[in-house]
Amino acid sequence: MSQVIALSILEDSQGMFWIGTMGQGLYRLDRQSGRLTAYQHKPEDPRSLASNNVMALLEDAIGTLWVGTHGGGLGR
Image 1: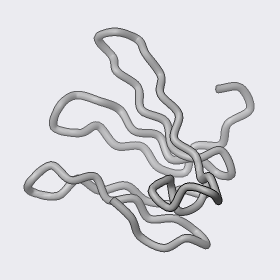
Image 2: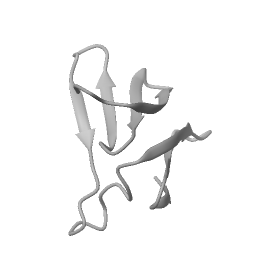
Image 3: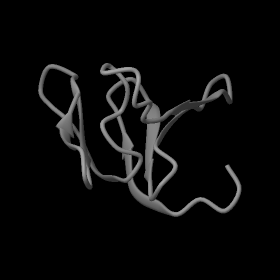
Image 4: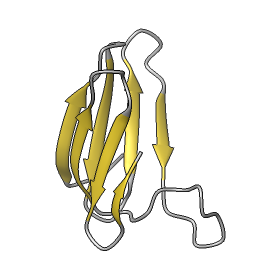
């Protein structure tokens, strides 16, 4: 994760850190294992991240992560 501009950061109810970036998608950091997982927009995959510009993150009352993007709208 070098040269990453973080636009949003959230610690969820499971203790995972989510980091929304400008142009590089969304990262999930598992503090216990140290594992970093990347999620990015893939035009051929409609289930992928809507945009790699992640502006906002929110976890709702039932634990769903909502991802607000620039250019791709809102997703979960």
